[in-house]
Image (cartoon, rainbow, N blue to C red; front, side):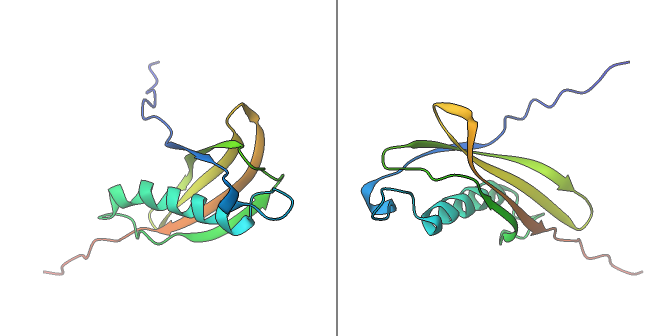
Length: 120
């Protein structure tokens, strides 16, 4: 039996924590982290705006650890649900040096655009 292999690479983006992104304890501000994640998924979806509404709705957010000044972060995304009405993207933020060290996970929902069916 033959299987079909998914050759589409998982989208990714790198982000370095700078002085403007941190609080007094040198930890990454949560709103900056969220904005990076939201912009990341928007940029993925904008390529498919004819089938997906490009406005993400946050479904689930888990902040697991802090990131700190000068940390280089890797954002990755994958489809975890796709049906006739919506698309769910899981986005993970990890330390670039150790991809097993997850900083944050979020699931964004995107409604699908249903084609208008003409009655005859």
